[in-house]
Picture 1 (cartoon, rainbow, N blue to C red):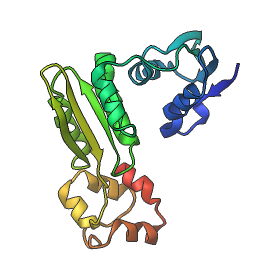
Picture 2: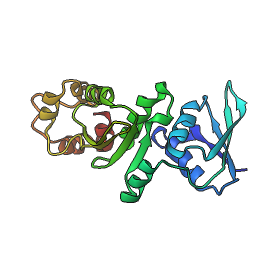
Picture 3: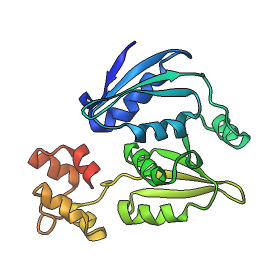
Length: 220
């Protein structure tokens, strides 16, 4: 049985690598997941994104290493007609069925999915009530970095398309700081002058200071 040592992966690649490994399996095949903490958040994310097509068997339960045998039990997860219609109409837009997540994992899973998006890309959430509280939380924690479009508004299902905007598109350092004072803390961390030097673009500042623009954008 092949094994996947998760601590050796970059944080942003951990779950996506596990999903890629799982998707490459044929029904009945397994792999051993090795982690340095209990991977229960991954379990709930897999339940939400892959449904009931896998078995999760803990082989070792800490305290230093957690080992889980993950087996693929099916090729296609049964979906409701409402999900199937979206799958057929737009294969490239991922949809997260929030109702399959335990309550304490719902918003963190959505935020994780959003943070993994490239600017300009979208995903959809499917819920059994209006996710307006999530909207206000995203406003508070992500500012104007996202678009929120209702595709369906009840009475049984609510579907929302969430799009990630470019954090630094066409804006100067000063404009970004003026829109959201919280981002000045990021500029301070990277030693970027957002006052007198605020007329420069992010691209220009990154080039002058040798800063990784992708890392700065992620921090913003």
